[in-house]
Amino acid sequence: EDKVVQSPLSLVVHEGDTVTLNCSYEVTNFRSLLWYKQEKKAPTFLFMLTSSGIEKKSGRLSSILDKKELFSILNITATQTGDSAVYLCAERRGGSQGNLIFGKGTKLSVKP
Amino acid sequence: GAVVSQHPSRVICKSGTSVKIECRSLDFQATTMFWYRQFPKQSLMLMATSNEGSKATYEQGVEKDKFLINHASLTLSTLTVTSAHPEDSSFYICSASRDTDTQYFGPGTRLTVL
Image 1 (cartoon, each protein chain N blue to C red):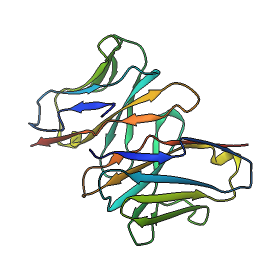
Image 2: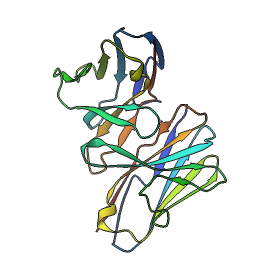
Image 3: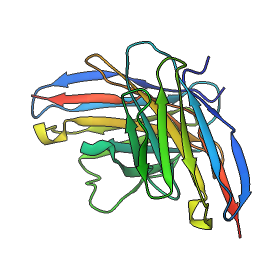
């Protein structure tokens, strides 16, 4: 059973569109929720969310966490072809291990 | 489906010892496995890419003699940190891929070197 579930698994949009990517997680020993963008090599860190209802923004990207409903969304406005990538969501658990539990990612393709 | 496990989830060792970390794809055959190290501020650094049956390809700056990678089967890759030092303490994450696009990530292994 998947612990971190992302949806949709893939998405094709045109430049200028706005997209919303979803991530749901389990509550067990939750510490934080992280978003990454993966293009060719290592995933690039985007956001870390720990508090519910506080939006984090970076340019055209924004993300928010809902700890009551156990999900997070990543919004990208005015998409560009350079936004094409796999977006990964990961839950960091608490405790001495602090493991990251990754979702399977959402593959976003932005067409010109 | 597409579950990747790592063992151990946490290891503490003394300086100078070697530590082996296993990465397994539980329900699929992984033609390629990747090893990452997590740095402060949550960034992930790709250390090496391994294909079953062949030598791993290391990223620039990663010492291949220190971080030994073996990909002996389509479901198992191992990372051995040799002569570990405190600066090797980190969170090591593997991912596995069965095609050219999608990587499935393991839960990571936290290494602490005393």
